[in-house]
Image (cartoon, rainbow, N blue to C red; front, side, top):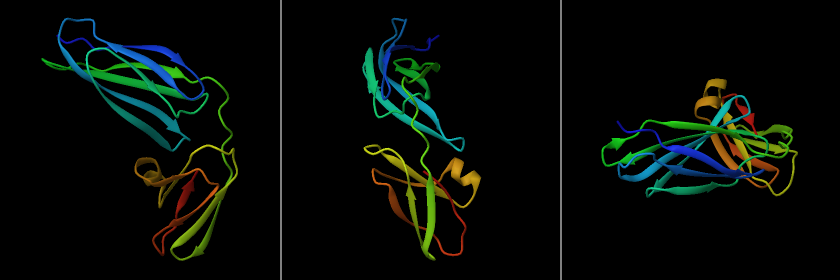
Length: 163
């Protein structure tokens, strides 16, 4: 039986998490697959996937959001097959940024000007879809460090926007 890997949180800050991965077995490990999950607003779960080569590993994941719960799951790739999943949860330190205030204005039938307030020197994600279900599962999206963006849409549709 292949055991799940041990995920140990080494440290965390406002915008990063460092963790180590190891196996408590003599089975040869060729690498790990790690997923980092977090919820963006109440409508959108985000995921970042890391594929890591080697037996032992210390990883640092950066560009995270302050005071946000993250779930890290990992499994090992071994000579006998994949291990079961293991999970850890951690909340980054600091104060979570205030949600931006979004305004969306139609320019014409296929373009919408989105503008918002919020801190400088951060990356914003703009998500849009024609239904709440699509907004949650597979929205159109774009990123920018600016405070406005023109989004191209299909004519004769109503859209929901989230920044």
